[in-house]
Image (cartoon, rainbow, N blue to C red):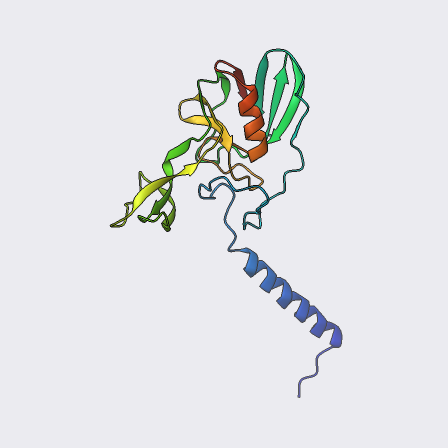
Length: 205
């Protein structure tokens, strides 16, 4: 009969538990590989272990005067809204991932569309509107017979360069979009209602 030191038994048990924990975590999606997810309704929490509740967004701009401008900071994933040079509000963001970087530079709002939908990303749905295939890319995925494309909601869309704009969307807590600037719904609506065509937008690294 083999006799083991009790301390060695405890050590082996701890090592086994650690190995199991590491193996469970290895299946998590890598940073920047999140599929496009559309905006979520108020009060609902997306089923993502990576989701961080928004605790930084706020708005103090009601009653403030002065020309609006927006600075989007990619490094801290926040948008800063100014009126006449004074800070009016801050919004949490999720910007472009590693493969779809949000372009940096100085731009202006060139389109506002309150009920905008993506023409590239969304779902294939049946005639009743039921999702048949979710999170598809029309440039890569073929629609099954009897389905149609339904673009992901990008409400309160504020385009500032090419196909890129600010809009309501899912925030997992890190850059995860295909280049657009996702914002919490209430902040997207607030920014939308306080910008005009031509409002300056600066995107910095």
